Length: 339
Image 1 (cartoon, one colour):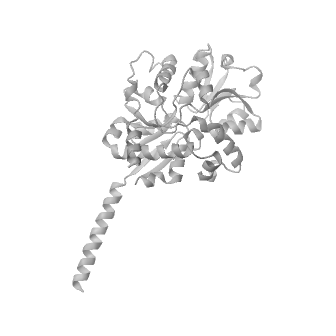
Image 2 (cartoon, one colour):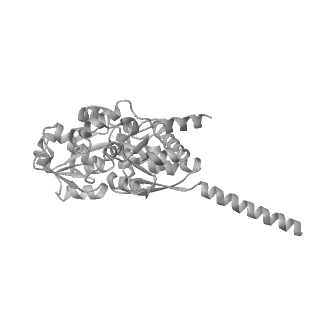
Image 3 (cartoon, helix red, strand yellow):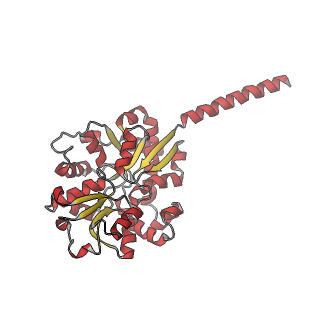
């Protein structure tokens, strides 16, 4: 009996040590999303819903901030390991001496839409008409801020001739339109579909498709992405590869399933009481996503061109685009999946 008890005790200790080792190995990773309910960032929550993080042996927590610039600050402070936000932040940050790298590209286009309030639409018919107007963005220094300034400048209106107002996203953006605090503003689905349904706003510039994006920005504009600090990726290659693999699987799921099937996987609070509107918004957005998470060949140059046009931090600076993204982690993940 004593021998059995000793064996049981030793086994118990071994089991406890193994469990502790496994728990230590599956260290919690926190990813901050610049507005989790935005369809442009759908892959973040969908990966969690599909169980792909767990399939990779990862313990991942998804948090949300209303604007990408807030998520970026959390990353730089070391409060989170990764961000789901716009690729353009990696270029902006490199110009400020910060090394951040996109490992997975979700969107080959911004998925952003410049909406003009129905009341202002009589006089505001293109970006050339924004002089003296108040334009809504999610946050100052956010990607919506970058894109708004570029669209206005391309239309011949310098940033000194209009006002940018941070109004967040979703319901706070809708409220800003309804309360006439902004004449126009940049937002994403499902907010776009909600405003069109109520008749409170109209589409001014549509960057949900490749055609619309090329017309507005002059090329493919990789946008929503998963990015991390380069030093973290290099010192946590296993975690970085597994995260990339999980996201790549989700992008493949999106490419091979209908909007209805994708919506069925999402939590109810993402679409509320109007699932049909959410499905419609999703259908309008599906062309934006990459199928494999890789950077489009002409993408980095277009983004650099846009930022160099007006961003004083980037203008005239040498940017090493090769350091702003990597396809290696997705490629490594695909090889792992093929085994």
